[in-house]
Image 1 (tube, rainbow, N blue to C red):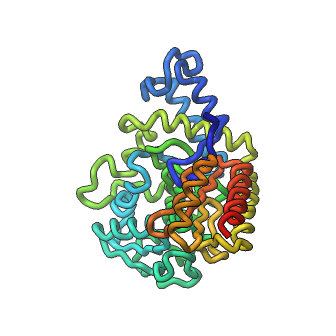
Image 2 (cartoon, helix red, strand yellow):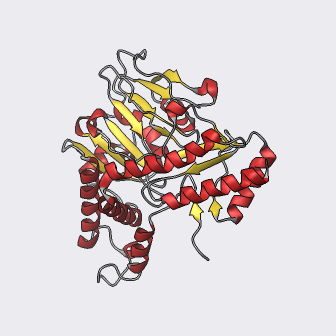
Image 3 (cartoon, one colour):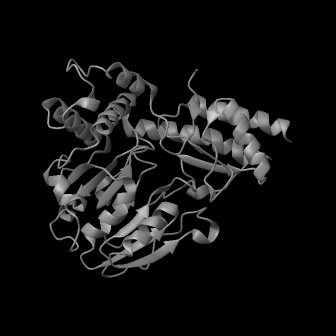
Length: 360
């Protein structure tokens, strides 16, 4: 069985060199005589793994010294509750709702305080990013929340919202490490790793130190307090050790590839191949307004459900898998994360051209 081109939105494609390295170390990690899966998280070997992973991530993102890097469990969805529990001092937060995950975060936060939806693109099935240059920011808002890249709908903030001095919190799950980022513009920048960084089961949260306090909402569980994890160096309880190990390998791969500037260049090039074809195709069309297009997730449709199903089925037979779109959009979606090679996108476009000719 040869490897397929995996366009899954997550858990998603991982770099082949990383998979090979991980496979080679499966039985014996660097002479320890055991797998990282079996290793104590209190061992010096694992301490080095987590320290190196954090340092490499800091190098890749130029993370300022006054930010903590936390390797947490519960995925991005657990952050929907952790953020208001830890940040709602005035009991007020502003949310920009540009997709399913921002909407879920907005709904979850309502359990903890007054939550204002200050902008939304739900009126057009989340197919664009609203103008966020002059928003009705609440004077007493504790933070302003966005989901920066919308996996399901294929939209991306190209310019961060003007928060008028309020703390910006961003879920970057599906664009994590896809381009350079100025961490200092955010109070919290976080993401589930299973889309663009590693295997499922972990979220990385990068948090400005002044936001990590004991002053949290009454009743906040110990495990849901950022200070608990920051004080313990992400080792308060047994972490997702194997996931941290694989993420660390991916960080090293990214550095070897030339860092985030190089990844952005490659991602722009890959996305252009697919968008250029969609823009001239008579059968397929993209569902996102061009100014809001994501480099990571590209939804497209034929306009005919049966034709969409036929395409997905035939594409799978051709080794192009996980192209079925999310049920709220329908059609197809190609997730073309960092680890998707340019050849994969070229193979997809070649197949789409062939399919279009055969089904004209």
